[in-house]
Length: 587
Image 1 (tube, rainbow, N blue to C red):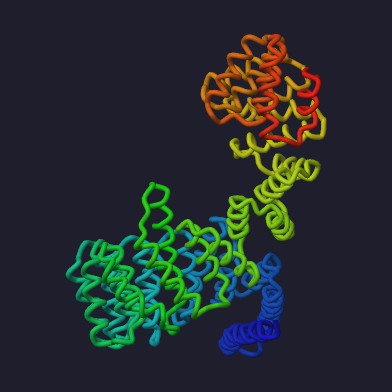
Image 2 (image 1 turned 45 degrees about the horizontal axis):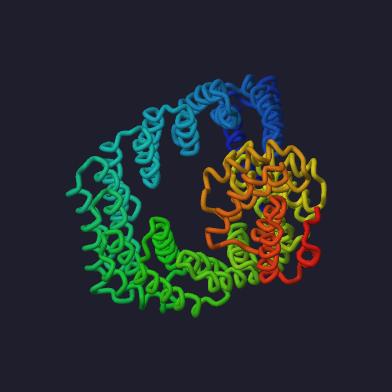
């Protein structure tokens, strides 16, 4: 801040000197006896000084007012017209820029030897989109003021903005003839020639720069990248290969070459370069991460398409092992490792890497989400609860974190906590319909377990409104209604739809059979439950239900046999033991 004020004070002093010098000259012209003119001049200086004060304070409206009052008294002062233009140029309206252009033109007419006037004029015309005029201003400045050759680059850039590449090339050539072969001129000419389809000329420019600076790695890399962008990748590769032959330590060029080999489907050549590069600590870490990230993406895409590229996975993991041994405390390295292992289907290793990234800090939301996904796949519900609590402190508005928290609580039968989390998901997530259907399904189960049946039914209805054929919802909703003996016609309709679409699912068949049982349709229930038994996948509940149905049909002995069979699969059921002992059902 001190430097900024000092800098402004210096500018103020310089401008004030410029103003005063004009005043002195005028006094010499007029003569010291002309007192009224001297008074006016002092008044003009006063207004100018006030304007400078407000300009420094960035109160441009007041600064402009004082500059204009000074200019009314001293209309031939070029500095005043410059300052008025400078203030107006800070505005955003086209009207302000138009006025600024008029003021700076007046300043230039009054004083042609000030390069700052030209620079401001060019800037104003650029703002107005008048690139031809801006170019004209720079050309005049370079012609009339010695030592302004460096502004040839700005002039060339303006011609580029004006979509005049040939003119820009001429200016860059002029700059090169004065300043020598340089990076800016050469690289810009390469791009312009390629845009004009003049590949031969572009190559000549690249060669010229590389030959002038044969040991400058970034020049050959930049040229190779330009060639690749313009469809000349093979030519770019040849330049890199030639450079590396004489510059064996050009590791960044080697990394770029490896990437180009991969883009050209020359995987084996790329691998020969990459293995030693990943062992070399002097090679840029970000370049390594980009390469390995590309491998991770390719492996993931292949996996999504149903293909497993085992060889590519093994090579990528080998590169990662080299990387992590060199950079054991780099968060991004462990994040990349987690992504890579996850793409390769190695969830346990991916979990280890994500946990390490979190331990090191500065990990992003996706890391937490991937970690929780892995833990949910492995039923690590305690870990999920611990990590969602930590993640929610960092990302309190992420609905998926509440989803994982609710899911873990749901699976641990902590229904009140699950409901709290799922209700948060519904508040934060509105566009993911499949997720909302799943959340409402688990809310229906959770509310039912807490005997909050009205809320349970509402949640199931919300789930079915999104996904009418959600089999889990149709099964649970119809079964719960049958247990409560409520809305049985609806339960019958849902269960029959379920069985129609899943004719061999024993669980769904059992649900439909039980709905029919509760409705007193015992013969129909028997047909359905026997279909469930005949699948060979019936559990103790299904067989017990079969016994109940047989009992209602008067086949008591057969019913007891089924109950005994069910007890063999679930010996701890007191109700089942009671049925067998007393040879009857208990509602």
